[in-house]
Amino acid sequence: MKIWAVSNQKGGVGKTTTVVSLGGLLSSWGYKTLLVDLDPHGSLTSYFKHNPDSIDGSVYNVFQNASRKHKDYNPRQYIIKTEFPDLSILPASTAIATLDRQVASQGGMGLVIANALAEVSEEYDYVIIDSPPMLGVLMVNALAACDYLIVPVITEYLALQGLDRMINTIKMVFKSRKSPPGYKIIPTMFDKRTRAASECRDVLTQKYPNNAWDDFIPIDTKLREASSLGVPASIYDPTSKAVASYSNLLDELLENNIPDE
Image (cartoon, rainbow, N blue to C red; front, side, top):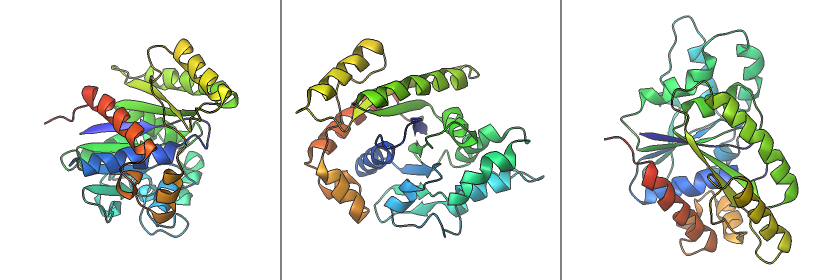
């Protein structure tokens, strides 16, 4: 099983769209795929028509069980199968927004998700984690658990300024790992009609030559339409421009991220 995290400390960059698009493609290509929602906003959970304000079992329960005297990391009872073959989600509850305050004094809480996913490692080929847009116990869990990191960034100058903060966070958290994961910066919502977008993309490739993806995810209304229906874009419209780009990205990711037998 391979674990990918999708993370950026700036919101609105296409994190959830990237998680769902890659997850939808992986599952349609025959890989058993689990999507994990670690964002208190619960956008991934909402995408699949579950209400993070009222959901009964969620990743919040995993953290609660892990904080007890007799630790229990098993996430199975909280995982929900979607209507799409080979695609499941571990949803979020908005209650996870309180975790930093609740577990601040407890040791080992940065590895809860890594331990929970180890419990189901034989059941999935790929796991994709939707990380929150702020540094805290949830983002640390995502970065500590992943084998590879995907960093979506909008091709506009304000987003590029925030990217530096995310790269510093990556280096800080990965420093404690014996084998730091690789990461890829993904230009999203690219509008080829604007000079600013092209200039921002050039800055990315010049500043991060070893980590910036040499392609991009274009602006595509099909992504919004798919989201409104709760359907992965690859299933809603496999011929769309964005799906073609996500397919190219996935091909590249799979070259170096083949799941263990």
